[in-house]
Image 1: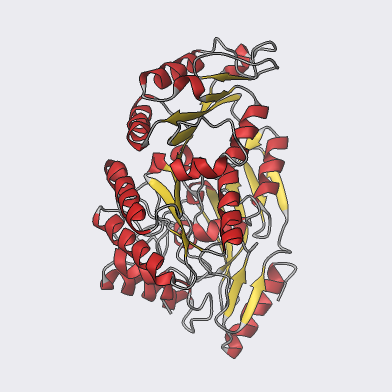
Image 2 (image 1 turned 90 degrees about the horizontal axis):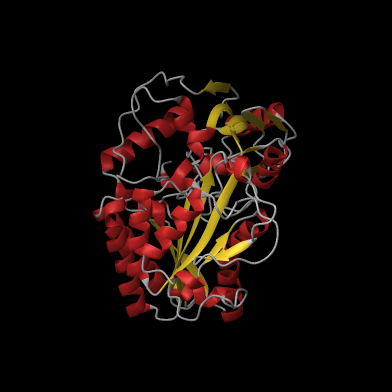
Length: 459
């Protein structure tokens, strides 16, 4: 079913409710946990609910609006939408459903923080129009939150919480989003970027800890040695001795007073430059500060890359987004099965969790894995190239990693949600009484278990 507007969504839900037919909400199909795969019944696609308006400080978006279109529309008005999931063809409804985040979450957090208003159609045909600061009218109980910066495992529940916080991240199991008001920010005058190479993981983690304490980057992304080996197919200039890399971005305030038309377009961390126009001056104090930080670390400073303009930052964006593409190419060419993790741990255990991943992967899957992602949030992704004839080998190891993340106070889902494929992990993180509280909320909104049957396994 492909309704054209909110009344069409309401009519479909009323018909399904009367007949007891399950309904699965479909976004753009970019999710990785199978939430949109139906367990019978109807699939309700929201692709036609794609109205988009950009205003000063906010955007009005239907669930079918694509993230890339919102980014482009905001950019044309000198604004930006901070959430930055890797897959820009994701729908806004999907990103709200999973409370998606992405590379800029280090500074800006996840989607929930940027939702100011929601319209949600319920299974009985009623529509809720709720704004930030409007509290729920029942006591859902309290679900203890892990001590992490990102968590999308199950419902966020606490007395007096906002309606918005209940619906965001509920993965299409409580209602159908038909519209959202999203907060926008003024685009920063300039952004400094860098890809800093290291001889190994320890040096990279040391740098991340130092930079977290001394600077305010909006992005800290990690790439391990196997990741760099894949990336060399497209970026052969990656230094041969590099065994880890950190990509950072730093917004510059007041940088428009220091713009240079003659500065180099990119530099090594040692300060050398190539010709071309730039939007960050070589005498910018923030550039000097970052060069000093890089020199003070155990980085391969002379071989690292600094972006001073939009062209080079786009190259770095391509660098970051190339890795998932290369992983998928490897899977297709080798016939392997990709199996991945989405766990995060408290910042104090960042180093310990990375070492756990590395040690066990080298024992079980040498040469058949990559680790990359949001190291500033202690949230890196493991991708295993598994033998399709023996998928339990990888799934058992990922389950071991999930238990370790929870034992360290972390989460089994930091940004992807659990969907159907990973719903079994919910019981690793929460006690039975907490899952019972989630089931009670699910039953309050969807007593027939019509919406998203099988997602989160709460029906």
